[in-house]
Image (cartoon, rainbow, N blue to C red):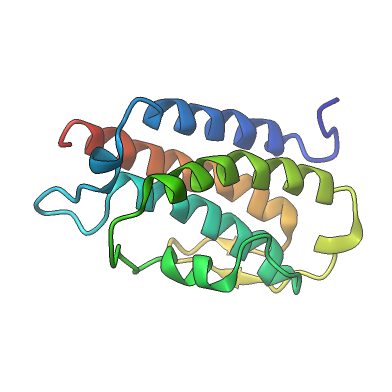
Length: 155
């Protein structure tokens, strides 16, 4: 049953499925290739979405993320790939794309996100609570889906 208190999670879940579908047919080399003029590759964009969601939802609520801090640091804004991601790591990232959303949906019905550290993002959007984040995440994920689709034409 969809989460009636947080309907944005449905949009996020559908977006993540679309993102996964958009990269399923790409091989390891294609996912890792950084086209000329770009700083990142397709798999970085996918992993960045996971890292961002974990940081924005869990860390900013004073909770432990579902992924290691090293993962968040590797894929935070401003970072770029330091080495190719292995086929095994790619499969793990794809699994995390879905599992972290499912866990977020379950955690929304707990008090985990009751104490949120408000902040203003780089677009000037004031994000004060988990509802604000859940409204922002689909915008962020759609933007990166656009990057992924553009990169697909170049790899």
